[in-house]
Image (tube, rainbow, N blue to C red; front, side, top):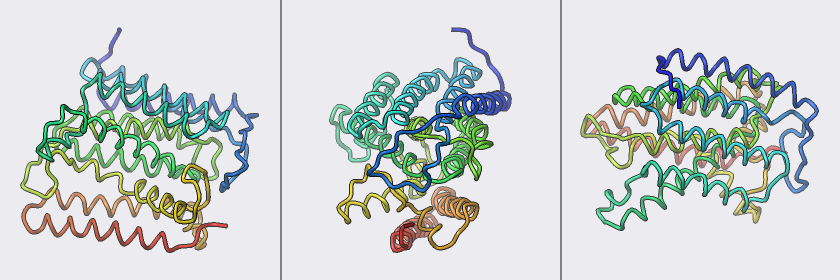
Length: 344
């Protein structure tokens, strides 16, 4: 396989340009696309806007990984699998696959890199048990599934997935650069650049949607980034291996996922059916504009990250104070947004 070694800046620029061009091409070629709507679902918009942004962005990301050279072959494998899972999402966008088929496909594509790269969250080390890696693999599988589907849930308004996922990419890049884990920094920046290329057409009012092909792809890559990140704390803080701080960077999508899932279950509704009961919809119901909702999510992401960083960069009592602040912040926002009325 021919490989090119470029700087991350050059590779990110290529990712952005390629993503922008591919997304524009997909948008033009699929203008007449009409999604088969599930009658049991309630969506914010039923406009027949092409949902092919995800497949274009995933291809741009995969191609850009080849420009980082041999050092990032793990991410080439993840990039290839991410395109495959994006295709599964594309099939769902076109044919409305049932949730069992989607979950089965996700599990198969997740398990391959877990075994191939021997990458996992070492929960057994934290529990001080040796169960031949079975618990580690199960925990890692469930974690990536959670990230994939929480990112999928957050894709419910123009520009929102890019705002949330892009913030996560930059937060990971900052933390991994500080930890001298430049391989993870580079791949996070490539993903961010690919998302920016799509955002040009997804900013409200959107001309192109991400679709399940996009959310599955982004959630997949971010999920594996969080697993591959080898956290070695530099100070004696609260967060120590194997619970790396990257696992907590997904606060916003997981918060939305838990609110929506718990609300639907308590109302005897299936969590797998789309609706207008996400945090974004509740804010719109209060009279927020779409752009104000996007800014609210940026602020929510930034504040949770500040609290998280405080637990890492400080030691002793200050670290625990920030940790307590983080968990109070999470519980407060869960109660706050769950109390808000969904959008009719």
